[in-house]
Length: 97
Image 1 (cartoon, rainbow, N blue to C red):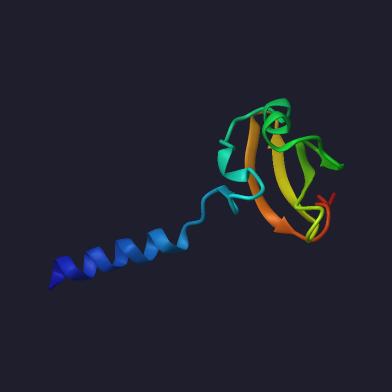
Image 2 (tube, rainbow, N blue to C red):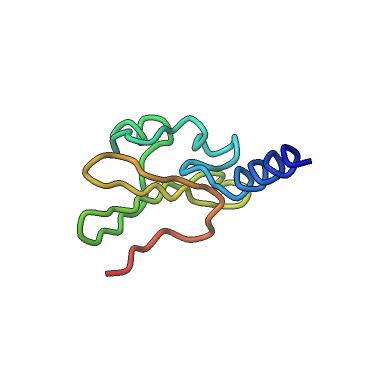
């Protein structure tokens, strides 16, 4: 019984942890990896439409699905490269100062 509780807790914790890269197959975001440069991400997703910067963080917005229902990929970079990306956003990303 004790082992079942431990396994259940491990499964619950894994379900709560979110990957820094998440999205649908339609945007190309699933091809991205943490640490990629902005140029590499652009080569996979396409040219960006907007950039928001604050300090060492930069959020870049890439438009996709523009003919049916326009949405954006938000990709956040630091000096170390890509740190997170997600899709399905209705507006460009903004980083607060």
